[in-house]
Length: 442
Ligand code: AMP
Ligand code: GLY
Image 1: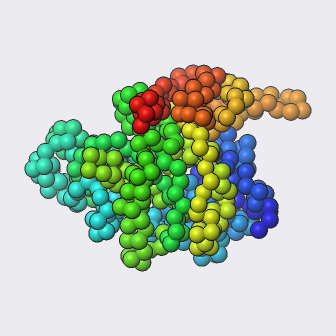
Image 2: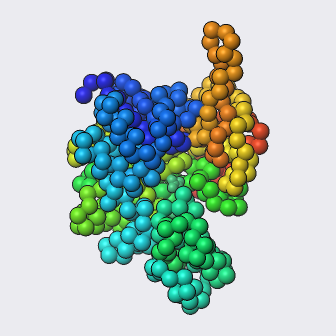
Image 3: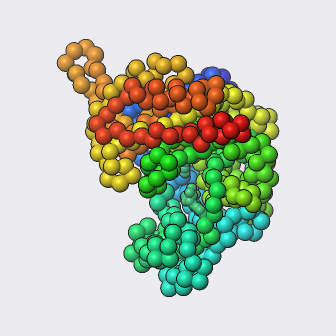
């Protein structure tokens, strides 16, 4: 294939900006569309007024515009079966089928698969009755973890420190139905202790290309305080993921999941993301996601030297074996998320963002937009000037590379200093754990 490919990326966050940015570097690609995209993505792709879960609208567009490759960012369209729909029309699309996407869309399905194929994970029990669930909680005691079965926009997991907290979570999910049908079944599981890491691979079901490891920072405040968020920052590689540990995760978690699915009649194609807890007795799977992580992708892709489009095409042809040994930049990469005031609760919007141009002038810095929109500020002259406004809870992912984790941290925070908007909040300790480990010579 020559450089004539038309690529459609689905989604509107920092992950999708990083994907569009990386895809734009491929010599195979001529034009990128993003549905719906955001203000920053508009720098590299033509943004479309089609929602990320509007499967019919996306299919229509891909047919009409003869899209050569569609890349799905968020899980919603995958669990609605967008890959199956596109495949009916022989449209090439990167992501797992509806059946495979159940790995993320149903935690019950995922945990049962783990149990069946001996994948180490927290011990668990499934409930469809709140009374029985509460009874069980009384028996096992706290801490324990309560999880809604279905998709709940990242909010369906409660790590309960007390029996009361766990029972309240059961009531919210099963009686008040805050996640609608997603909470009609729940899981109660053992609370694991350890450090978390994200291991992502790309697979065509036969072969696996391992992506660089990453560690997300899920809590809103420094030192992992405050409520959970979609992710406030990430660094790659994750220092805790030594080569030995990575092999362990692959052998005990990733490969058995792909083989297990195959035995169940499901060929997994796309990104498989394992959230793992590194416990004293080894790595255990917390969850599987069926897509690129966000913000992980923002710190992983700047380190990837290989052509991502070539890899995705190989997956769609079942020929990943040809390109599975990916080429990586050895430097460290740190991503700091800049969020709106109030996030992860109700947050402010429409605040003007300053300093973006200055930030990106710094060497080895990229700024991925997670929630921005463009506004024309002067339509009178020949050329309208544009300004960026905040439009979501997570606004920007500032990404910096450095020879060491310390250099990457210094670089990224230097860029963060240049950027401002009213109410801007960010964590000042992204990568700190890796820094401490590096100082200890780990
Ligand atoms: P999940 O969506 O299953 O990854 O859960 C979201 C977050 O909840 C994880 O990243 C962990 O921080 C936490 N979590 C989930 N399951 C457990 C568990 N069994 N023990 C301790 N923490 C957990
Ligand atoms: N970083 C967490 C996620 O993508 O689900």
